[in-house]
Picture 1 (cartoon, rainbow, N blue to C red):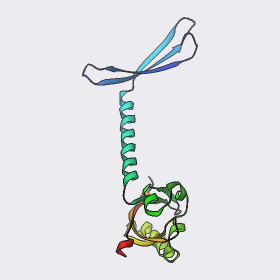
Picture 2: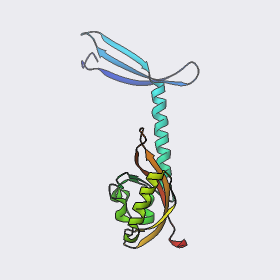
Picture 3: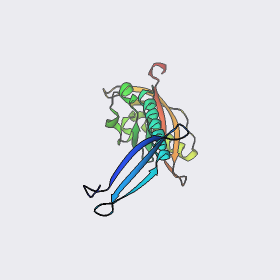
Picture 4: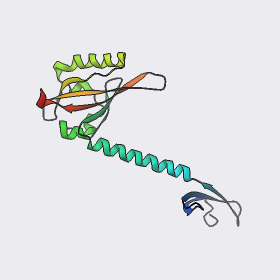
Amino acid sequence: ALRTGQSQIYEYQIPNTDGTIGHYEARIVPATNDTVLSVVRDVTVSKQAENALRASEEQLRMITDHASDIIFQISDQLMLDYVSPSVRRLLGYEPTEVIGQPILKYIHPGDQSRIASQIQDTVASQRTPVVEFRVRHADGHYVWMDSTGNIVVDATGKVTGLVATARDITQQV
């Protein structure tokens, strides 16, 4: 810090007296030509929170990446906000191809009005029945699916969308 005239931040770990590892951050700031100020703070709790968040995100990613059903989220405008990687195996689409698209774009024309109505009923009643419908596969044929999920509300109680799963039931129909 003295040589460069710039503040520097160092992170380090040291064992605590109870045997746990403490995480610390030292900030070194040049004060004058030959002195620096150093502030050390214990960042153990924030590091633990970061690690817990990272582990939770990895677990969620592992679940969504390996789920046999499609997991999806639609907005209150019926746009696909999230689609799990299983859409690739079941319907032949890359998730990035369908995210941002209207969900009705992929539903069989004969099922679209019924599904749109059922979504509206789900929002109004805040109950989510199992619905069956046909979805266009990337190669053009239709796959029978059933779907169920839950509405998503914000802090004020306003419905902001729906999170659901869908599975291929073509063999049962």
